[in-house]
Image (cartoon, rainbow, N blue to C red):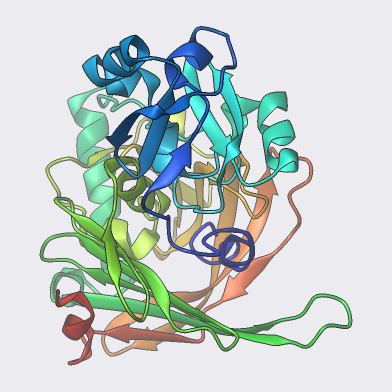
Length: 360
């Protein structure tokens, strides 16, 4: 899934370093948005966000300062090919799309973006309204049935912290294999997410975000996440099945099931969920209520936004809970998406030390 299968590629290509403060964008942003590529002068500069902008004259500088959101580099300076959580961007490789400036990690990234920017720019799916009160009631009923199948409401509602660990080895060709450890932890009292990885011999790094604030961190320091980064992090995990079940009563979650949602397979029930900008479809086993698959739109292993469907397998008991350890790709509308999946090495629920991850 996006939160497991594609993580290996995300770590290899994303986040080679934290976003740098004080990067210089020497091309006059006001001229560039107007369709003219002009190098600015160091005598006319403005600091905005993580960048210092150069302008050809004071008038353009003042125009920028009067409406910086119109002229600023998008995605907080992330590579537009790789998404808001990337930091591999260069200020000398840029492109204007629909009047906005995007920068890239390489010429290849820019070229790929130019071919189909709509497949690479994240957007929230609009919040829907259930088609009827009965559809909403039926959806809630099925979600509670899924909760019951995986341990029951009492056990689920007692989850304060939930953590998944992937411990794997990655090797390219004949190169030396690199060890990779990824941990994803949810704190449910406020919906916070802590994501951390260690790659080869590098120190750990990752993200921590609540709905109100977020940070990128490494072994030595941390940096405040921009809203576009924080939104992307929450969007990445908005379809996580255990997170959806645990937060099923969240006031911003929309749940429904209606005749149009019926599966062609009579052995399954179908539930539609919208949460944090992502629409997820859950297929439940008709006999047991267990989640057997989910569909959503998100970044695949090639970092392209696609319609993805995964099966949930290898359910194992953890205390009173029954939790899936294996996710397998069933289908994708991206023709270059490789088959794949991932097995979780460990799941920790309410371990006494998990709260320490969220200490500031």
